[in-house]
Image (cartoon, rainbow, N blue to C red; front, top):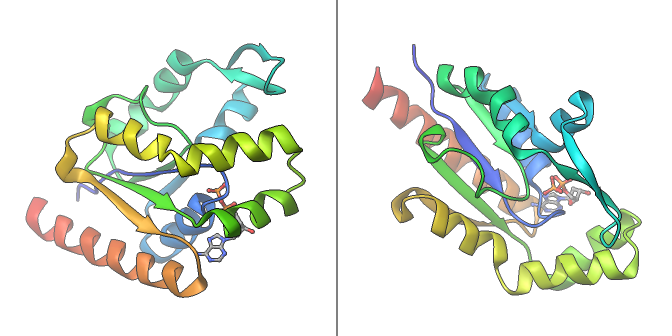
Length: 171
Ligand code: DAT
């Protein structure tokens, strides 16, 4: 049976990992965190001194994921989305969090002031939503509120329903 590929994207701290892991455990779809994958495989092409983080080697990440994505049934989590092949995804969710809540989450993660401000601005200017809207068919890009545990539960239920419908329609 074929299964869909789902992209979870959005500013760091909006809840992609939390949602992705929970969805995976309830549906059996495979959860892949692109940040972790890059770390494990050292898929970097240098270091960004300004942002104090390694620079992702996007081509190697895509190569690494290609076989799995072609097979289907993957929930992919990353805070960017313009370098993934468009054909990979059946649906794209951009998680959104109110600034005050996001600030608290990133502060408790120990982000320093510049990184904190950059990420809050990223959310205010809906940078990732626009990146998703430019990279994928508008009809498959959806924003999800990710402020409260109730939001999380509702998002899980909605996505599970969408998966079940997709499986009926495509098998
Ligand atoms: P991301 O993977 O997007 O960086 P995360 O899943 O690690 O984000 O979540 C960041 C923090 O926010 C973490 O402490 C869990 C919390 N969180 C995630 N989704 C939430 C929600 N819907 N309501 C309240 N807290 C949430």
